[in-house]
Length: 109
Image 1 (tube, one colour):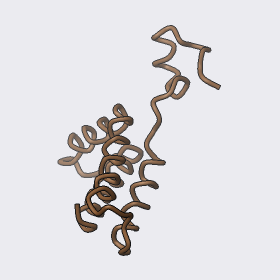
Image 2 (image 1 turned 180 degrees about the horizontal axis):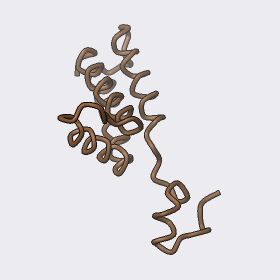
Image 3 (image 1 turned 180 degrees about the vertical axis):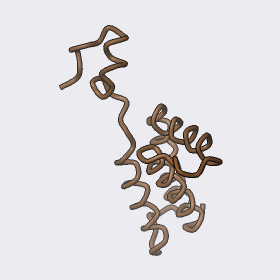
Image 4 (image 1 turned 90 degrees about the vertical axis):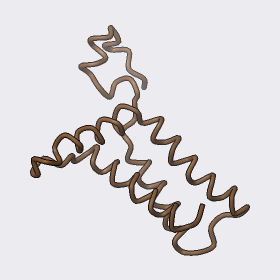
């Protein structure tokens, strides 16, 4: 995987993460695709994290070293920052869901 392709993937994952927090609502034609993309990121956060980790590791393994160029380093930083923003799927984050599952009051500290 080249640094450019890693950067493209990092930008796409960062855009999906941003869309999970602020979906597009003004452009009517993008409403349904934006909802679907936001739902993917917010409902499957561990899958998105695994995809980001796999992308970063595949770049390091394919080149047998961390990136030396600025594009690769920027891509890894962007991956880390965007994945820090992925909403965690932990008990206590969704009170409505926890109460419907009988987990009300049993949230993790």
